[in-house]
Length: 310
Image (cartoon, rainbow, N blue to C red; front, side, top):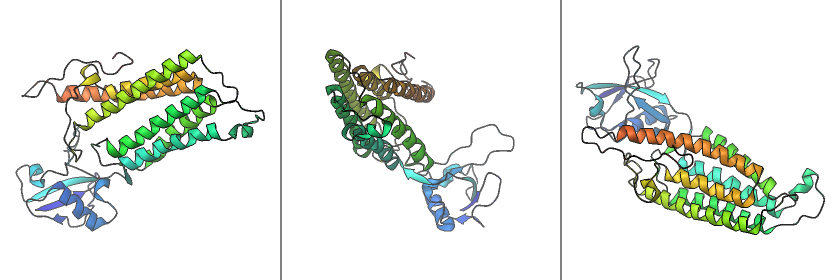
């Protein structure tokens, strides 16, 4: 089989095409492209079928596990694929590790070290119990996230664009410093002891629930991470599509009830907005995939995310 690899403009990416055996998979083709080009390793490649001129349809993305013959449409002797360079890639574990490591390391700096003298405060600093518990809560959260990254999560995609590392680190690291600055500030006014205990107790309950939600999602995927979409069931997933985002939002609500800072509530609102958009996208995708037609199961009636009630 001869495979022609072209760009979206029609230019040949691999001169003369590539000869492969008839039972070759898309993965074999990606490896062959890598050998011929050196620069474009498999995770950097996106291969699609060509579209007819003027077509408004979305191109069919080739799955690396499938045989090339599945895409030949009756012509088993040759195939043309459209190549797109996705740019430098990193594994999702690398991405998540660095974005979570920043808040885990930076937050304690504001608690343990006398950084406020660089902001003009020279007086003696008194550390309130709520600030100490907030440190434990914060570090437990991000340590949990790093452990989940390596031992719980199974990813549907192997890699992410390198640029996402800088974007995500800017988001998490900046908010980490922003919140840590105000919660550990010498002029910080603590809430009542009862409010602190209620907030942290509620938040810890949500953190444990969040971990359980991630374990349930993990069990939906095969060890290779390519099991396709399934309907999540069990625990809060019987009520909402994205129970993992729900518990994530509520655990930060618990933190803010206990610490009560403007910076913390700003982070909560921004994070809730982002996760709500993710939840809506996932909910629509699952309802479209599981529409009850042609033998497919029908997606059950559920809320999208709590809060808000969507």
